[in-house]
Image 1 (cartoon, helix red, strand yellow):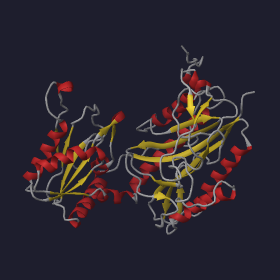
Image 2 (cartoon, one colour):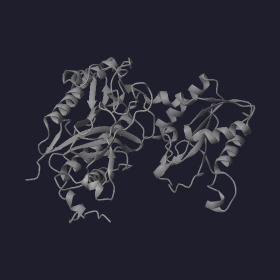
Image 3 (cartoon, one colour):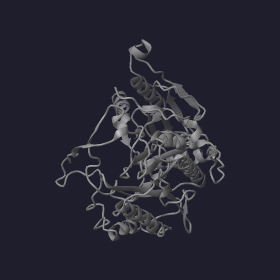
Image 4 (tube, helix red, strand yellow):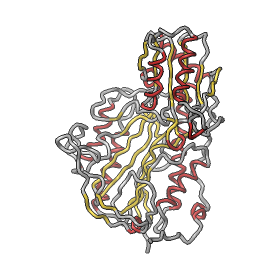
Length: 472
């Protein structure tokens, strides 16, 4: 049986002497009046849509995460729940919760502005030796509250996600005379422009990313593992108030492959390391960046790809200001790719990208080929396919909005987005390119559109590739 080699030293010692090069001052949670204003706006939207009430559903999914950010946004509730918001402002908000096996208790997350909380109970024969369905009981409780409000035949807006289908189906059966209307856009539209206090949260999340990145730089050298780099990043940001430690990827190999998870890969001279920080959360809000680390000398092709991507972000950044077309920002970045001979066009419809289907629109076969990886093989496994299946950027666009953890992107930075930038928009621009077993890069910053330009929220670590000497 293969044995995984021990590191031969205390992993914790790698961070000895680390201090970030700037001071992090964590902002306080959002005030109650910010949530009250959100409910006011939501109720106004409900009036315009002729809804008598709204039913908002959020569930718990793997690793104790909520399936969407709706309840966190409306009332700062971090667990699962069904929130009933009567359109009439003189009626109370009611929250039904505690219907999964999650063990999370407030704080954080006491629901702001909610008067009644009803505990449904997680049941089932195997779990509690009690027959029944927690989902069905939650729907029964919701239907009773709605009927008590006189809405058995009313129009009710529903907000949820794919985990909501069973509960919403029960409501359809329990209230056959009611008219249920899916209306996620009521809250989705509110995610495009961030308030000043929301921006403080995103800025804090970006600063936590910078601190984690500096910690990763501090420990990176030939001989450490991807898990140790990942752990250093995680410790530094979690110790200062970050909420999660599983929302980012690390790629370590001699080709610059990104979007990976640590598996014991030992850093070697000639490696390219990608830190793709797709989610560090502070008080429910996220930021996103990407950084590259080169260990010793790398190939000319790799340097070319790094240069094309880095210059692409810089060109796009220069256009950020209120009134600029999102498509122009996107196309400016991909102009660098074109000049470096990587692409022929900035347009998403014609651009190759890593996860695209076959040319005829059908499935693309992932090439089967043995790829040597000593550290993976030390675990008794072999890499038998080449990833990704085709060359190009990871996505056929430059970036997307950022805001709340678990929320859908409210917009993409792409060639076909002809909206204009507005003050208060927050987004990531990450220039990516990957060609299997040759070269790769994923590098980007997080931006806030201000009244006269932009603020680079991730400016505390330079965009350019971080260079680490190779082993001698």
